[in-house]
Image 1: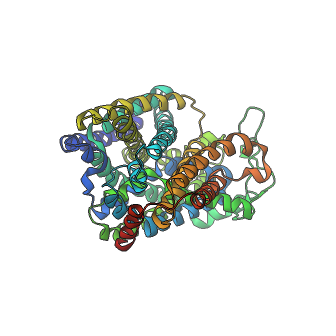
Image 2 (image 1 turned 180 degrees about the vertical axis):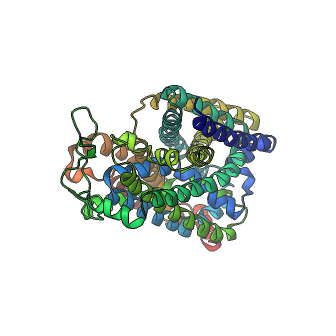
Image 3 (image 1 turned 45 degrees about the horizontal axis):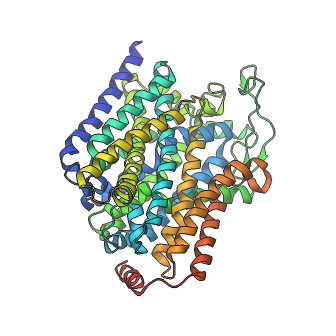
Amino acid sequence: MKGDTLQIFISMIVYMAVVTGIGLYFAKRANESSENYFLGGRSLGPLVTAMSAEASDMSGWLLMGLPGVAYWYGLSDAIWTAIGLAAGTYLNWLFVAKRLHNYSVIAGDSITLPDFFSNRFKEKNKVIMTISAVFILVFFTVYASSCFVTVGKLFSTLFGFEYRYMMFAGAVFVVFYTFVGGFLAETASDTMQAFVMIIALVTILIASTIAAGGAAAVLENAQAIPGFFEFFGIASPTIGADGTQVLLNGVPQFGEAGKYGLYTILSTLAWGLGYFGMPQVLLRFMAIRDAKELKQSRRIATVWVIISLVAAVSIGIIGRALFPAELSTYSEAESVFIVLSQNLLPAFIAGLIMAGILAATISSSDSYLLIAASAFSKNIYQHLIKKDATDKQVMNMSKIILIVISLVGIIIALDKDSVIFTIVSFAWAGFGATFGPITLFSLFWKRTTREGAIAGMLSGGIMVFIWKLILKPMGGVFGVYELLPAFITSCLFIYIVSRMTAEPSAEIQDEFELAKKQA
Protein backbone atom coordinates (compact mmCIF):
# COMPACT_ATOMS: atom_id res chain seq x y z
CA MET A 1 0.00 0.00 0.00
CA LYS A 2 1.47 3.38 -1.06
CA GLY A 3 2.10 6.18 1.42
CA ASP A 4 -0.87 8.33 0.43
CA THR A 5 -3.19 5.35 0.33
CA LEU A 6 -1.94 4.22 3.74
CA GLN A 7 -2.71 7.63 5.22
CA ILE A 8 -6.24 7.50 3.83
CA PHE A 9 -6.65 3.99 5.19
CA ILE A 10 -5.43 4.98 8.68
CA SER A 11 -7.70 8.02 8.90
CA MET A 12 -10.75 5.95 7.94
CA ILE A 13 -9.84 3.21 10.43
CA VAL A 14 -9.63 5.88 13.15
CA TYR A 15 -13.08 7.08 12.19
CA MET A 16 -14.53 3.56 12.27
CA ALA A 17 -12.99 3.04 15.71
CA VAL A 18 -14.74 6.16 17.01
CA VAL A 19 -18.09 4.94 15.66
CA THR A 20 -17.56 1.52 17.24
CA GLY A 21 -16.73 3.22 20.55
CA ILE A 22 -20.07 5.03 20.46
CA GLY A 23 -21.87 1.72 19.96
CA LEU A 24 -20.07 0.12 22.91
CA TYR A 25 -20.73 3.17 25.11
CA PHE A 26 -24.49 2.88 24.63
CA ALA A 27 -24.62 -0.92 24.70
CA LYS A 28 -25.60 -1.33 28.36
CA ARG A 29 -28.36 1.29 28.31
CA ALA A 30 -29.68 0.14 24.94
CA ASN A 31 -30.10 -3.43 26.12
CA GLU A 32 -32.03 -2.53 29.29
CA SER A 33 -35.36 -2.77 27.47
CA SER A 34 -36.88 -3.08 24.00
CA GLU A 35 -38.14 0.53 24.24
CA ASN A 36 -34.57 1.72 24.80
CA TYR A 37 -33.21 -0.56 22.09
CA PHE A 38 -35.78 0.45 19.44
CA LEU A 39 -36.75 4.03 20.40
CA GLY A 40 -34.18 5.29 22.90
CA GLY A 41 -36.83 5.75 25.60
CA ARG A 42 -38.20 8.84 23.80
CA SER A 43 -35.25 10.85 25.11
CA LEU A 44 -33.82 12.62 22.03
CA GLY A 45 -33.07 16.34 22.07
CA PRO A 46 -33.85 18.67 19.12
CA LEU A 47 -30.34 18.67 17.61
CA VAL A 48 -29.95 14.89 17.77
CA THR A 49 -33.48 14.39 16.42
CA ALA A 50 -32.86 16.63 13.41
CA MET A 51 -29.34 15.56 12.53
CA SER A 52 -29.86 11.84 13.04
CA ALA A 53 -33.07 11.95 10.96
CA GLU A 54 -31.33 13.60 8.01
CA ALA A 55 -28.18 11.48 8.22
CA SER A 56 -30.17 8.24 8.35
CA ASP A 57 -32.35 9.44 5.49
CA MET A 58 -29.71 10.61 3.00
CA SER A 59 -27.30 7.64 3.10
CA GLY A 60 -24.38 7.11 0.73
CA TRP A 61 -26.42 8.17 -2.28
CA LEU A 62 -26.04 11.83 -1.17
CA LEU A 63 -22.26 11.69 -1.63
CA MET A 64 -22.16 9.17 -4.45
CA GLY A 65 -25.55 8.64 -6.10
CA LEU A 66 -26.66 12.27 -6.49
CA PRO A 67 -23.27 13.66 -7.63
CA GLY A 68 -23.11 10.71 -10.03
CA VAL A 69 -26.43 11.71 -11.63
CA ALA A 70 -25.21 15.31 -12.03
CA TYR A 71 -21.87 14.17 -13.51
CA TRP A 72 -23.54 11.83 -16.03
CA TYR A 73 -26.73 13.63 -17.06
CA GLY A 74 -26.15 17.20 -15.94
CA LEU A 75 -28.16 19.62 -13.84
CA SER A 76 -31.84 18.88 -14.50
CA ASP A 77 -32.33 15.34 -13.16
CA ALA A 78 -30.25 16.03 -10.06
CA ILE A 79 -31.59 19.49 -9.21
CA TRP A 80 -35.28 18.64 -9.61
CA THR A 81 -34.72 15.61 -7.37
CA ALA A 82 -32.99 17.86 -4.84
CA ILE A 83 -35.82 20.41 -4.94
CA GLY A 84 -38.40 17.67 -4.36
CA LEU A 85 -36.39 16.28 -1.43
CA ALA A 86 -35.87 19.68 0.19
CA ALA A 87 -39.59 20.51 -0.07
CA GLY A 88 -40.56 17.07 1.24
CA THR A 89 -38.21 17.42 4.19
CA TYR A 90 -39.66 20.76 5.25
CA LEU A 91 -43.31 19.78 4.82
CA ASN A 92 -42.81 16.51 6.69
CA TRP A 93 -41.32 18.30 9.70
CA LEU A 94 -43.96 21.05 9.50
CA PHE A 95 -47.13 18.95 9.26
CA VAL A 96 -46.36 15.39 10.35
CA ALA A 97 -43.73 15.54 13.10
CA LYS A 98 -45.64 16.98 16.07
CA ARG A 99 -48.93 15.23 15.39
CA LEU A 100 -47.25 11.84 14.91
CA HIS A 101 -45.24 12.25 18.11
CA ASN A 102 -48.34 13.04 20.18
CA TYR A 103 -50.58 10.53 18.45
CA SER A 104 -48.04 7.70 18.88
CA VAL A 105 -48.10 8.31 22.65
CA ILE A 106 -51.90 8.49 22.79
CA ALA A 107 -52.30 5.37 20.62
CA GLY A 108 -50.96 2.83 23.08
CA ASP A 109 -47.52 4.45 23.51
CA SER A 110 -46.44 2.97 20.16
CA ILE A 111 -42.69 2.48 19.70
CA THR A 112 -42.63 1.30 16.05
CA LEU A 113 -44.48 2.52 12.97
CA PRO A 114 -46.45 -0.75 12.54
CA ASP A 115 -47.37 -0.45 16.24
CA PHE A 116 -48.77 3.02 15.63
CA PHE A 117 -50.86 2.04 12.61
CA SER A 118 -52.25 -1.00 14.41
CA ASN A 119 -53.03 0.90 17.62
CA ARG A 120 -54.47 3.84 15.68
CA PHE A 121 -57.21 1.57 14.28
CA LYS A 122 -57.60 -0.57 17.45
CA GLU A 123 -56.75 -3.82 15.69
CA LYS A 124 -57.33 -7.16 17.34
CA ASN A 125 -56.06 -9.49 14.61
CA LYS A 126 -53.01 -7.31 13.73
CA VAL A 127 -53.48 -7.35 9.94
CA ILE A 128 -52.19 -3.80 9.46
CA MET A 129 -49.26 -4.52 11.74
CA THR A 130 -48.33 -7.63 9.75
CA ILE A 131 -48.62 -5.91 6.36
CA SER A 132 -46.51 -2.99 7.62
CA ALA A 133 -43.84 -5.30 9.00
CA VAL A 134 -43.62 -7.32 5.76
CA PHE A 135 -43.22 -4.24 3.56
CA ILE A 136 -40.61 -2.83 5.95
CA LEU A 137 -38.64 -6.07 5.78
CA VAL A 138 -38.77 -6.14 1.96
CA PHE A 139 -37.87 -2.52 1.23
CA PHE A 140 -35.32 -2.09 4.01
CA THR A 141 -33.49 -5.19 2.79
CA VAL A 142 -33.21 -3.48 -0.60
CA TYR A 143 -32.13 -0.26 1.12
CA ALA A 144 -29.47 -2.06 3.14
CA SER A 145 -28.07 -3.59 -0.04
CA SER A 146 -27.59 -0.09 -1.51
CA CYS A 147 -25.50 0.82 1.55
CA PHE A 148 -23.37 -2.29 1.14
CA VAL A 149 -22.83 -1.40 -2.54
CA THR A 150 -21.65 2.06 -1.42
CA VAL A 151 -19.09 0.61 1.00
CA GLY A 152 -17.86 -1.87 -1.61
CA LYS A 153 -17.40 0.84 -4.25
CA LEU A 154 -15.71 3.15 -1.77
CA PHE A 155 -13.04 0.73 -0.61
CA SER A 156 -12.45 -0.98 -3.93
CA THR A 157 -11.97 2.43 -5.61
CA LEU A 158 -9.69 3.71 -2.88
CA PHE A 159 -7.52 0.70 -2.21
CA GLY A 160 -7.89 -1.46 -5.30
CA PHE A 161 -9.26 -4.40 -3.33
CA GLU A 162 -11.83 -6.80 -4.75
CA TYR A 163 -15.30 -5.17 -4.59
CA ARG A 164 -17.09 -8.17 -3.07
CA TYR A 165 -14.58 -8.58 -0.25
CA MET A 166 -14.83 -4.88 0.64
CA MET A 167 -18.62 -4.92 0.45
CA PHE A 168 -18.77 -7.91 2.78
CA ALA A 169 -16.30 -6.38 5.25
CA GLY A 170 -18.32 -3.15 5.38
CA ALA A 171 -21.53 -5.07 5.95
CA VAL A 172 -19.99 -7.00 8.84
CA PHE A 173 -18.86 -3.76 10.48
CA VAL A 174 -22.31 -2.16 10.19
CA VAL A 175 -24.05 -5.27 11.55
CA PHE A 176 -21.71 -5.48 14.54
CA TYR A 177 -22.18 -1.81 15.36
CA THR A 178 -26.00 -1.93 15.14
CA PHE A 179 -26.11 -5.29 16.95
CA VAL A 180 -24.38 -3.84 20.00
CA GLY A 181 -25.74 -0.33 20.46
CA GLY A 182 -29.31 -0.20 19.16
CA PHE A 183 -31.23 3.03 18.61
CA LEU A 184 -29.29 5.16 21.12
CA ALA A 185 -25.93 4.37 19.54
CA GLU A 186 -27.48 4.85 16.12
CA THR A 187 -28.84 8.32 16.83
CA ALA A 188 -25.72 9.51 18.66
CA SER A 189 -23.38 8.42 15.88
CA ASP A 190 -25.80 9.64 13.20
CA THR A 191 -25.61 13.12 14.71
CA MET A 192 -21.83 13.07 14.53
CA GLN A 193 -21.97 11.64 11.03
CA ALA A 194 -24.38 14.34 9.84
CA PHE A 195 -21.70 16.90 10.73
CA VAL A 196 -19.04 14.83 8.98
CA MET A 197 -21.19 14.56 5.84
CA ILE A 198 -21.91 18.27 5.50
CA ILE A 199 -18.28 19.22 6.26
CA ALA A 200 -17.12 16.73 3.63
CA LEU A 201 -19.52 18.08 1.00
CA VAL A 202 -18.69 21.75 1.62
CA THR A 203 -14.93 21.06 1.72
CA ILE A 204 -14.96 19.24 -1.63
CA LEU A 205 -17.27 21.88 -3.12
CA ILE A 206 -14.86 24.69 -2.22
CA ALA A 207 -11.67 22.78 -3.15
CA SER A 208 -13.03 21.59 -6.50
CA THR A 209 -14.38 25.04 -7.45
CA ILE A 210 -10.96 26.57 -6.81
CA ALA A 211 -9.21 23.76 -8.74
CA ALA A 212 -11.55 24.25 -11.71
CA GLY A 213 -10.67 27.96 -11.94
CA GLY A 214 -13.77 29.32 -10.25
CA ALA A 215 -17.51 29.16 -10.74
CA ALA A 216 -17.35 30.97 -14.10
CA ALA A 217 -15.04 28.33 -15.59
CA VAL A 218 -17.28 25.52 -14.31
CA LEU A 219 -20.33 27.21 -15.80
CA GLU A 220 -18.61 27.70 -19.16
CA ASN A 221 -17.69 24.01 -19.35
CA ALA A 222 -21.18 22.89 -18.35
CA GLN A 223 -22.88 25.11 -20.92
CA ALA A 224 -20.64 23.72 -23.68
CA ILE A 225 -22.23 20.27 -23.27
CA PRO A 226 -25.67 19.96 -24.94
CA GLY A 227 -28.40 19.84 -22.29
CA PHE A 228 -25.92 19.55 -19.42
CA PHE A 229 -26.68 22.83 -17.64
CA GLU A 230 -30.39 23.22 -18.31
CA PHE A 231 -33.47 22.95 -16.12
CA PHE A 232 -35.60 21.73 -19.02
CA GLY A 233 -33.06 19.63 -20.93
CA ILE A 234 -30.81 16.68 -20.16
CA ALA A 235 -27.40 15.56 -21.45
CA SER A 236 -27.12 12.37 -23.52
CA PRO A 237 -23.68 10.72 -23.18
CA THR A 238 -22.71 8.79 -26.33
CA ILE A 239 -22.20 5.16 -25.36
CA GLY A 240 -19.98 2.82 -27.41
CA ALA A 241 -20.29 -0.89 -28.05
CA ASP A 242 -18.25 -1.65 -24.91
CA GLY A 243 -20.79 0.17 -22.71
CA THR A 244 -18.54 3.13 -21.94
CA GLN A 245 -18.78 6.76 -23.03
CA VAL A 246 -17.15 7.41 -26.41
CA LEU A 247 -14.01 9.57 -26.38
CA LEU A 248 -12.74 11.58 -29.36
CA ASN A 249 -9.16 12.81 -28.88
CA GLY A 250 -9.67 12.32 -25.18
CA VAL A 251 -12.89 14.37 -25.11
CA PRO A 252 -16.12 12.63 -23.99
CA GLN A 253 -18.86 12.75 -26.61
CA PHE A 254 -22.50 13.70 -26.14
CA GLY A 255 -25.51 13.43 -28.42
CA GLU A 256 -28.25 16.02 -28.81
CA ALA A 257 -29.82 17.32 -25.62
CA GLY A 258 -32.87 15.42 -24.47
CA LYS A 259 -36.09 17.14 -23.41
CA TYR A 260 -36.99 17.52 -19.76
CA GLY A 261 -40.63 18.52 -19.78
CA LEU A 262 -43.26 19.19 -17.14
CA TYR A 263 -44.30 15.54 -16.91
CA THR A 264 -40.71 14.50 -16.16
CA ILE A 265 -40.28 17.34 -13.67
CA LEU A 266 -43.39 16.28 -11.75
CA SER A 267 -42.07 12.73 -11.77
CA THR A 268 -38.74 13.84 -10.30
CA LEU A 269 -40.31 16.21 -7.76
CA ALA A 270 -42.33 13.22 -6.55
CA TRP A 271 -39.21 12.17 -4.60
CA GLY A 272 -40.47 14.61 -1.96
CA LEU A 273 -43.60 12.52 -1.38
CA GLY A 274 -41.40 9.71 -0.10
CA TYR A 275 -40.66 11.54 3.13
CA PHE A 276 -44.17 11.05 4.48
CA GLY A 277 -43.55 7.30 4.53
CA MET A 278 -39.91 6.98 5.61
CA PRO A 279 -39.84 4.88 8.82
CA GLN A 280 -36.32 6.00 9.76
CA VAL A 281 -37.45 9.66 9.74
CA LEU A 282 -40.90 9.12 11.25
CA LEU A 283 -39.30 7.17 14.09
CA ARG A 284 -37.28 10.27 15.06
CA PHE A 285 -40.50 12.27 15.33
CA MET A 286 -41.80 9.65 17.76
CA ALA A 287 -38.55 9.54 19.77
CA ILE A 288 -38.02 13.23 20.63
CA ARG A 289 -38.35 13.99 24.33
CA ASP A 290 -40.66 17.01 23.93
CA ALA A 291 -42.90 17.79 20.94
CA LYS A 292 -42.36 21.52 21.53
CA GLU A 293 -38.74 21.10 20.46
CA LEU A 294 -39.71 19.86 16.98
CA LYS A 295 -39.84 23.42 15.65
CA GLN A 296 -36.14 23.83 16.41
CA SER A 297 -35.43 20.43 14.89
CA ARG A 298 -37.29 21.43 11.71
CA ARG A 299 -35.11 24.49 11.23
CA ILE A 300 -31.90 22.54 11.76
CA ALA A 301 -32.97 19.74 9.42
CA THR A 302 -34.09 22.11 6.64
CA VAL A 303 -30.86 24.11 6.65
CA TRP A 304 -28.78 20.93 6.68
CA VAL A 305 -30.63 19.30 3.81
CA ILE A 306 -30.57 22.39 1.55
CA ILE A 307 -26.83 22.94 1.98
CA SER A 308 -26.07 19.23 1.51
CA LEU A 309 -28.22 18.78 -1.61
CA VAL A 310 -26.91 21.92 -3.33
CA ALA A 311 -23.32 20.89 -2.58
CA ALA A 312 -23.87 17.32 -3.84
CA VAL A 313 -25.37 18.46 -7.18
CA SER A 314 -22.64 21.08 -7.64
CA ILE A 315 -19.89 18.53 -7.01
CA GLY A 316 -21.16 16.39 -9.91
CA ILE A 317 -21.18 19.41 -12.27
CA ILE A 318 -17.70 20.51 -11.19
CA GLY A 319 -16.39 16.95 -11.42
CA ARG A 320 -17.31 16.84 -15.12
CA ALA A 321 -15.22 20.01 -15.65
CA LEU A 322 -12.18 18.74 -13.76
CA PHE A 323 -12.19 15.07 -14.82
CA PRO A 324 -14.31 14.89 -17.99
CA ALA A 325 -13.08 11.49 -19.16
CA GLU A 326 -12.18 9.87 -15.84
CA LEU A 327 -15.51 8.10 -15.26
CA SER A 328 -16.83 6.39 -18.38
CA THR A 329 -20.02 4.64 -17.17
CA TYR A 330 -23.00 5.69 -15.09
CA SER A 331 -21.92 3.29 -12.35
CA GLU A 332 -18.38 4.73 -12.32
CA ALA A 333 -19.77 8.29 -12.27
CA GLU A 334 -20.96 7.65 -8.71
CA SER A 335 -17.30 7.72 -7.65
CA VAL A 336 -16.80 11.38 -8.63
CA PHE A 337 -16.70 12.47 -4.97
CA ILE A 338 -13.94 9.94 -4.29
CA VAL A 339 -11.92 11.01 -7.35
CA LEU A 340 -12.10 14.67 -6.33
CA SER A 341 -11.09 13.89 -2.75
CA GLN A 342 -8.08 11.82 -3.81
CA ASN A 343 -6.81 14.38 -6.29
CA LEU A 344 -7.45 17.68 -4.51
CA LEU A 345 -6.68 17.08 -0.84
CA PRO A 346 -3.74 15.87 1.26
CA ALA A 347 -4.01 12.14 1.83
CA PHE A 348 -4.91 12.15 5.51
CA ILE A 349 -7.50 14.92 5.05
CA ALA A 350 -8.90 13.09 2.03
CA GLY A 351 -9.34 10.03 4.21
CA LEU A 352 -11.29 12.02 6.78
CA ILE A 353 -13.40 13.62 4.05
CA MET A 354 -14.15 10.26 2.47
CA ALA A 355 -15.14 9.05 5.89
CA GLY A 356 -18.15 11.21 5.07
CA ILE A 357 -19.24 8.53 2.60
CA LEU A 358 -18.71 5.90 5.24
CA ALA A 359 -20.62 8.11 7.68
CA ALA A 360 -23.54 8.42 5.30
CA THR A 361 -23.60 4.69 4.69
CA ILE A 362 -23.35 3.68 8.34
CA SER A 363 -25.92 6.23 9.48
CA SER A 364 -28.45 4.85 7.03
CA SER A 365 -27.77 1.13 7.09
CA ASP A 366 -27.91 0.91 10.88
CA SER A 367 -31.32 2.62 10.79
CA TYR A 368 -32.57 0.31 8.06
CA LEU A 369 -31.39 -2.84 9.80
CA LEU A 370 -32.69 -1.83 13.22
CA ILE A 371 -36.14 -0.80 12.00
CA ALA A 372 -36.52 -3.91 9.86
CA ALA A 373 -35.45 -6.13 12.75
CA SER A 374 -37.84 -4.40 15.14
CA ALA A 375 -40.68 -4.72 12.61
CA PHE A 376 -40.33 -8.49 12.67
CA SER A 377 -39.50 -9.06 16.35
CA LYS A 378 -42.05 -6.63 17.82
CA ASN A 379 -44.84 -6.84 15.27
CA ILE A 380 -44.73 -10.41 13.95
CA TYR A 381 -42.78 -12.52 16.48
CA GLN A 382 -44.24 -10.99 19.67
CA HIS A 383 -47.79 -10.37 18.46
CA LEU A 384 -48.35 -13.36 16.17
CA ILE A 385 -45.79 -16.14 16.71
CA LYS A 386 -44.98 -16.02 20.44
CA LYS A 387 -47.43 -13.76 22.22
CA ASP A 388 -45.91 -14.46 25.64
CA ALA A 389 -42.38 -13.56 24.51
CA THR A 390 -40.35 -11.72 27.14
CA ASP A 391 -38.64 -8.39 26.44
CA LYS A 392 -35.28 -10.20 26.29
CA GLN A 393 -36.57 -12.75 23.80
CA VAL A 394 -37.87 -9.95 21.58
CA MET A 395 -34.48 -8.25 21.55
CA ASN A 396 -32.68 -11.55 20.84
CA MET A 397 -35.04 -12.27 17.95
CA SER A 398 -34.43 -8.80 16.52
CA LYS A 399 -30.69 -9.47 16.46
CA ILE A 400 -31.19 -12.78 14.65
CA ILE A 401 -33.40 -11.09 12.04
CA LEU A 402 -30.86 -8.28 11.71
CA ILE A 403 -28.26 -10.84 10.63
CA VAL A 404 -30.67 -12.56 8.22
CA ILE A 405 -31.61 -9.25 6.56
CA SER A 406 -27.94 -8.36 6.23
CA LEU A 407 -27.17 -11.66 4.50
CA VAL A 408 -29.96 -11.10 1.97
CA GLY A 409 -28.75 -7.53 1.44
CA ILE A 410 -25.22 -8.80 0.82
CA ILE A 411 -26.51 -11.21 -1.83
CA ILE A 412 -28.37 -8.39 -3.61
CA ALA A 413 -25.23 -6.20 -3.45
CA LEU A 414 -22.89 -8.77 -5.02
CA ASP A 415 -23.13 -7.09 -8.45
CA LYS A 416 -20.37 -4.47 -8.51
CA ASP A 417 -22.04 -2.65 -11.40
CA SER A 418 -25.13 -1.87 -9.32
CA VAL A 419 -26.14 1.80 -9.52
CA ILE A 420 -26.75 3.12 -6.01
CA PHE A 421 -29.22 5.77 -7.16
CA THR A 422 -31.38 3.17 -8.92
CA ILE A 423 -31.52 0.85 -5.90
CA VAL A 424 -32.37 3.69 -3.52
CA SER A 425 -35.04 5.13 -5.82
CA PHE A 426 -36.93 1.81 -5.84
CA ALA A 427 -36.87 1.36 -2.06
CA TRP A 428 -37.74 5.05 -1.57
CA ALA A 429 -40.79 4.63 -3.81
CA GLY A 430 -41.78 1.51 -1.90
CA PHE A 431 -41.83 3.23 1.47
CA GLY A 432 -43.32 6.45 0.13
CA ALA A 433 -46.27 4.70 -1.53
CA THR A 434 -46.87 2.09 1.20
CA PHE A 435 -46.65 4.30 4.28
CA GLY A 436 -46.85 7.92 3.08
CA PRO A 437 -50.58 8.08 2.24
CA ILE A 438 -51.71 6.08 5.27
CA THR A 439 -49.54 8.24 7.56
CA LEU A 440 -51.17 11.41 6.24
CA PHE A 441 -54.71 10.00 6.27
CA SER A 442 -54.25 8.53 9.76
CA LEU A 443 -53.11 11.86 11.14
CA PHE A 444 -55.44 14.23 9.32
CA TRP A 445 -58.67 12.42 8.31
CA LYS A 446 -60.83 11.08 11.13
CA ARG A 447 -63.02 9.13 8.70
CA THR A 448 -60.14 6.82 7.68
CA THR A 449 -61.10 3.22 8.40
CA ARG A 450 -59.09 0.11 9.10
CA GLU A 451 -60.26 -1.40 5.80
CA GLY A 452 -59.21 1.74 3.94
CA ALA A 453 -55.79 1.61 5.59
CA ILE A 454 -55.25 -2.00 4.55
CA ALA A 455 -56.40 -1.31 0.98
CA GLY A 456 -54.18 1.76 0.70
CA MET A 457 -51.03 0.06 1.96
CA LEU A 458 -51.45 -3.01 -0.23
CA SER A 459 -52.35 -1.07 -3.38
CA GLY A 460 -49.49 1.42 -2.93
CA GLY A 461 -46.83 -1.21 -2.25
CA ILE A 462 -47.98 -3.54 -5.02
CA MET A 463 -48.28 -0.70 -7.57
CA VAL A 464 -44.58 0.15 -7.04
CA PHE A 465 -43.65 -3.33 -8.28
CA ILE A 466 -46.19 -3.32 -11.13
CA TRP A 467 -45.16 0.11 -12.38
CA LYS A 468 -41.41 -0.48 -12.02
CA LEU A 469 -41.24 -3.99 -13.48
CA ILE A 470 -44.12 -4.11 -15.99
CA LEU A 471 -45.34 -0.64 -17.01
CA LYS A 472 -42.22 1.53 -16.83
CA PRO A 473 -40.23 -0.53 -19.38
CA MET A 474 -42.92 0.37 -21.95
CA GLY A 475 -41.75 4.00 -21.85
CA GLY A 476 -43.82 7.00 -22.86
CA VAL A 477 -46.33 8.09 -20.23
CA PHE A 478 -45.33 5.04 -18.19
CA GLY A 479 -41.77 6.38 -17.83
CA VAL A 480 -42.78 8.41 -14.76
CA TYR A 481 -41.09 7.60 -11.44
CA GLU A 482 -43.10 4.79 -9.85
CA LEU A 483 -43.60 6.67 -6.57
CA LEU A 484 -46.03 9.17 -8.12
CA PRO A 485 -48.63 6.75 -9.58
CA ALA A 486 -48.28 4.39 -6.61
CA PHE A 487 -48.80 7.23 -4.10
CA ILE A 488 -51.90 8.44 -5.96
CA THR A 489 -53.24 4.88 -6.19
CA SER A 490 -52.84 4.38 -2.44
CA CYS A 491 -54.62 7.67 -1.66
CA LEU A 492 -57.54 6.74 -3.90
CA PHE A 493 -57.93 3.31 -2.31
CA ILE A 494 -57.80 4.72 1.22
CA TYR A 495 -60.44 7.33 0.45
CA ILE A 496 -62.82 5.15 -1.57
CA VAL A 497 -62.67 2.09 0.70
CA SER A 498 -63.03 4.27 3.83
CA ARG A 499 -66.15 5.85 2.36
CA MET A 500 -67.56 2.42 1.51
CA THR A 501 -67.06 1.01 5.02
CA ALA A 502 -68.53 1.85 8.42
CA GLU A 503 -67.25 4.88 10.32
CA PRO A 504 -64.50 4.29 12.92
CA SER A 505 -65.67 3.62 16.47
CA ALA A 506 -66.26 6.41 18.96
CA GLU A 507 -63.07 5.41 20.81
CA ILE A 508 -60.95 5.83 17.67
CA GLN A 509 -62.58 9.18 16.85
CA ASP A 510 -62.09 10.46 20.41
CA GLU A 511 -58.38 9.58 20.26
CA PHE A 512 -58.11 11.36 16.92
CA GLU A 513 -59.64 14.53 18.39
CA LEU A 514 -57.32 14.36 21.40
CA ALA A 515 -54.27 14.10 19.14
CA LYS A 516 -55.61 16.96 17.01
CA LYS A 517 -55.94 19.23 20.06
CA GLN A 518 -52.36 18.55 21.11
CA ALA A 519 -50.93 19.22 17.64
